[in-house]
Length: 411
Image 1 (spheres, rainbow, N blue to C red):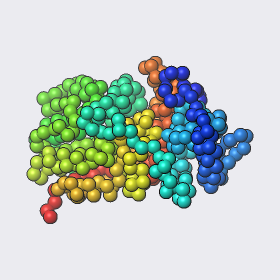
Image 2: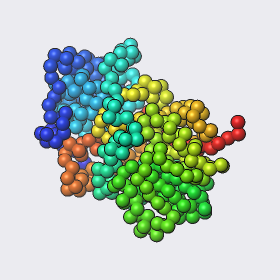
Image 3: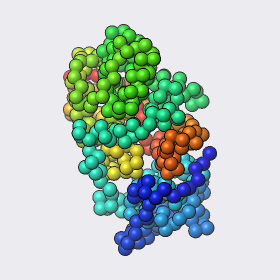
């Protein structure tokens, strides 16, 4: 199904009610129009604007309110592009293919001759989004404390909110692929009978449950009170409360010694400023001979350097304070700040594209149930855009996801 373009309810979404105005907006809108059309004319897409089709032909989008579209794009760049979708200023019947073309060419959408001016127009991460200990819990709550019932609607029965691993079978069952992903991470970290496990980032408890079922004792830490409550319920239902404790605790405050430290798609929320602290904390908590298993979403290193410190649509609406590392960044940070080294890695980015497709399809199919939870049409468009935007990143190869094993090595 598709979502009908709808203007936001007045007052419900501050900043989306009014289109930016004034002389500066008029100038930036004119520039945005020229740059947008210049980019589109060389891309395999079709953009419908003022009754004309632009582009080389391919996935389609329609600009429904051109003035607003270019005003938002001119004033706020890619944030404005996403906001114009939220307000219904543009639409696409099949959003992901169009966004995938853009993602594949993202480094060159703006002419390279103009990219040196990026610092003059790029939004910077607000201080309120720094992932300090006194701010991180609120940042995490923005997303993960939305509603457990919302996440139940589109996730599989394992409530795994990270990439599944289909292992070459993209038609396979999603829950089985999620469990396969978890079991692989437990295997490489050698989690078994008697293993002391620390999990950084609980999710809704599936990894902790499966580790405990192997005979491990698990301490899992989270900053989401909603996730903590449901994870504890699921752990109790599995009869494993004697093996698993779930604490509301910042990773920087964890103590003890562990044979395995596991963290699935949590490093993305740490913030680049605190990557050294994150990995040094893991290093300090590992017992001699211990292993750390990390699942991380990755971006190209050159793009990471170019966008570090920037403020994006994803930051503003989905994950405040988040930033993706590169594979090279993980190697460099661990070498410079820890005794840990990467000894094994597996990339499976296309599996994430398929995972996101499943989530988005289910989310749209259950849109009426989302509405009954109290979420409005703008939220529906926001969440759909988020899932498609993310899927496009993996489908294009711009983003990847890896399971990385870290160990202390001689020398």
